[in-house]
Image 1 (cartoon, chains in turn purple, brown, yellow):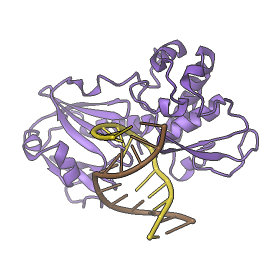
Image 2 (spheres, rainbow, N blue to C red):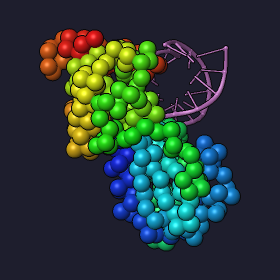
Image 3 (cartoon, rainbow, N blue to C red):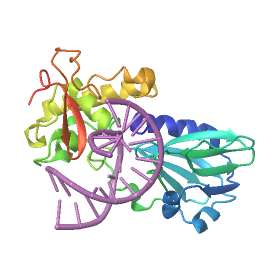
Length: 259
DNA sequence: TATGGCCTGTGG
DNA sequence: CCACAGGCCATA
């Protein structure tokens, strides 16, 4: 469940449960997580208090009272779950944070999520662009960050160094709102159209935040183009197309999204 | 830019 | 069986 609105929601959820609590232990439950968080690192976490949980793009930082931070990234399918000490762990729990009266687990069926221990403000997030929702980010800034590259706008929106938090769904949905063809090279987009792109992406993000779990159940109904290949566009009726860009599916309406 | 790898699950 | 999955990295 991981693009900006989902990560922000997850971080809030986690913060409510762990702020000010002391880690009684950390268990690595899958070798893929263990590579980034070796045994001595997880051992060193025992007794540390979690001060806060901060989202940044699709990343989450669990700040500790000794200045270090647990850095979590959900990748494709991660999420948090919580339970009491009597509760069984969920099927795909990959990491367990033990509290004195319960636990929080990183659940991730695909085991692509990562957790690493950071020494304070190391350089791990330095390359990230501003969060897509950051009010100081405007079309002029975005124009400058994109530069005159040949890359198409849709894969460019996925570049976390340009702006942070936009993933495959919100990029497609945002471009639909903006009526911009995902294949347009960024060099051909001026400040005016980029303002629409930014607005469209933010509209999609806001919708996702309002729905909660965008792609699940009811949430999936909210999509305009994502996953709707062959269905009529809600705006102009033309069949939604699916293409592949940079190895990822892109959905768009060839009728009302302009080059 | 395209491809493959990381992992596992689901749906056609 | 195969294609695909809300991410990201390494490679040529």
